[in-house]
Each structure stands twice: as C-alpha cells, then as structure tokens.
Image (cartoon, rainbow over all chains, first blue to last red; front, side):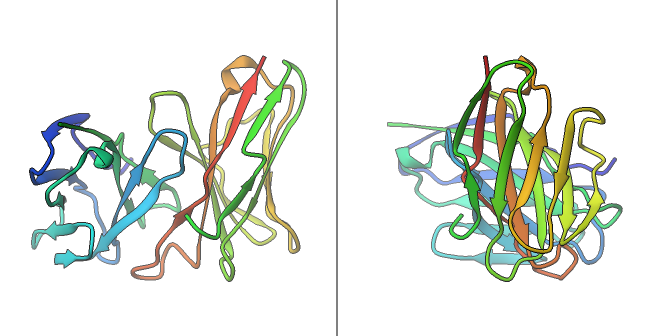
Length: 110
Length: 116
C-alpha cells in the first residue's frame, strides 16, 4: 500500500526556520503533494501544494526534488502559534484512497 | 476549511444508539471523503463518495458503518449500535475531483462523537 512517511515530532524555537520532510516513494506521474496543518479540535487546514521544484506562498515554501519521492515543507521564522500537527498528502493513483501519513507534531518553544 | 460544513460538531450517544453525521461539501464539489481520527492519532481514510455512488469504502468497518451522498442534500455517515470504540473525530472533506492535477481537498471542522 502506497503511503507517506514523516517524522513523528519536531521541536523548534520561535524565530527559527523549520523544515519537515515527507517521503512518498510511490508517487505517480500525475500526483500532487499537499500539506495541511491541524490544530487540536479543528479540521486540517490547507497550507500549500506543489508538483515539482519549489512553490512559495505567504505562509510556507514547498521543495520537491526532481525524482519527487520526497518533499520538504519549510516554515520561515516560526511562532508559538505554529505549534500543530503537519500532514503531507499525496493522491496515489494506485487507488482512490487519499492516504495521509502519520503527521509531524511540531512544538515551537519560546 | 471555509465551505465544508459538518454537523453536528459534537454528538453524545449511548452504547447501542445510532449516530448520524452530516457533511455539506464546498459549493461545486461533487467528491466527498470521510476520515476518522482517534485521540492522539492521525487521519484514517474511511470512504470516498461521489453523488449517488460509493467509489471506495475500503477504509470503512464492514459492520455498523454506512455512508451515502444522495443526489440532493448532504453526505451522511451513519454508525449503528455505537460502541465506546467509535468515539472519535470524524472529518469530511470535499474536492472537485481527486484526479484533476492540482485539485485541492478541503476539510470541514469535524464532528466529535462521544459514546457513553
């Protein structure tokens, strides 16, 4: 079963840059990579989406190497409010199932 | 999350009762997905539906759980004869189509089921 793999948790301090990597070895040609942020008692919130190379928006950057077997979410200058669980999602064409990884629990400390 | 509406947000049921969770997708979206999240765990796929069709229910328990997405109205996730282990957050998501390149899936705020 195709799946994504992320680190279980990460710690950081306010003002630092945080990079969270997701591996998705079975990604298919047409699959996009999407990252979500989830706070306790809330639904996952869309952060950023990309196909290859680099994508940047007002909150994050997404780096995808040429082989697309992994992706890295980069959060610049994190604050305490960035403490959350971050999920990467790839639509695997092998099936209709949208498979989430286990998520990365980011803890930002003062 | 704007646009995917779930209700109720919180639901308490006694063991053996039925729970019905509703999801209205974003305007224009015809694909709906249901996920379950147990406390301190990740999101587990349950079922993927299009209007009037179940496309993939491989993540749905074979007994007591059912889902529908009628031509008119919201998608419904139904849990019969609930047990304590059904206590979880149930998230609905919607999209235009998962296979359209760059299509984005948006989530609702979830329905929290507590079985007492």
